[in-house]
Image: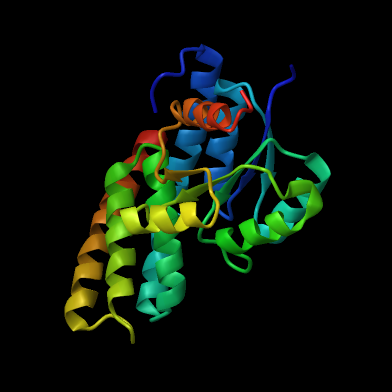
Length: 128
Length: 107
C-alpha cells in the first residue's frame, strides 16, 4: 500500500513547514500543503487526501467553514478532518468534534509525536 | 522536539528551528508595532500565530508570552484598558528578551 496522503492547511508558513517535515520525513506520509480554505478545497479535489489537518483560525474561510465546504463536495464529503488549534479548551474541542472532526490536535504540537497521532486517528477511521 | 533518530531528519529540524529563531525578533517587532498602533485585531492575530508556532519550534516561553497577549486583547471588547495595556507591555518585553536570546543562539 502506498503512503497515506495528508493535506495540511494552515495560514502560518512556519506551521506548514514543521507539520510537513514531521509528517513527511518522520512519518513517511505524502504531504500536500495549503495556505487557506480556498486553496484547501482546490487541493482536496485535486489530490484526494486520506486526511485533512486543518487549522481552525484562518483569515477568510476559517477551518470550520472549510470543513463544511469539504463536506458539500462529492469527492471530499467523507474525508477525515483533524483540527489544529491553539485554543484547545474542553468546550472548543467539543465544538470542533460536533462539527464532524475526527480529532483535535492542540498547538503548539510535539513534532516527533505528530505522525504517531495522525497514524492513530487514521487507524480509528479504518485507514491504517 | 524529540524522538527523531535519523540524523538527516534531526539536521532538517534543527535547520528549520534555527531559521525560525532568526525570524523571532522581527516577528516580535511586528506584534509590538501593531500594539503601538492600536491595531488590536491584527495584533491579536499575530500573537495567536506566535502562540502556536513558537512552542512548536521549541520556544515555549515566547509562545506563552504571545498567548498571554492574545488572551489579554480578547478580554476587552473595545480594546485593552490601561491595566491590560500595561500587562501587554510586560509580555512584549518578555517576548523581546526571548526572541533576542533565540536569535543569538541561532547565529
